[in-house]
Image 1 (cartoon, rainbow, N blue to C red):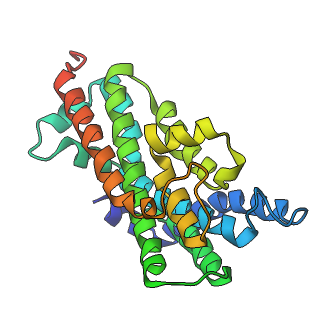
Image 2: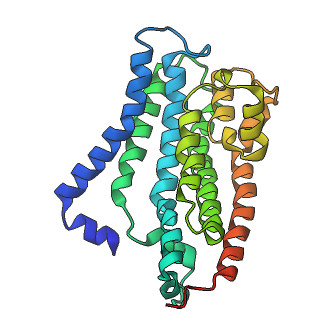
Length: 254
């Protein structure tokens, strides 16, 4: 329904999608300007950082397109409008994701893939079948990991009432961090985003394997292929937290 409503005004949709892509592209423009003054950043060249940026932006864009509206859960909890979703014969999470579905967010996906295509064409690496396969797997698994974080953040809003900014800190904030090479960050932070909130599996570990670079934490090369498994392992507790949140919901009485 929301897609049909959006496509009723196609020019408006195209302008909105283009604006969404242009605004998010400014992050990469800042990186490009930085490389006008330096040759490498943390030992990484511009095409190598473009690989990190493009893969992370595309993954977050997909997750935001499909589950970005979960940040509205807190508002629905506060005003009691979540009640209307509970009485419908549909999964509540699906209703939350589809509520006011913003197709314009596809702009972030397109610009991320565009930067990624440029990076792949500019990189001087040996493209084995495993590395070629790792590129789409990295994007899809990364989207699933970000999606799990979004669902977990939505579940936390049943407890906190309004935790959309906490959710954004791990998604948008995490993606901003993943756009830069892991060699820039302290080992304790790398351990946290690898073993606690496994954002490193979104693109750092797969990208390091594609580029033939060692992992700063010394993980083996085959760890780069664990992103789908990691996505599944983080989605299980996120979905359990969401179900627990729904069971604890008591409405506002209004």
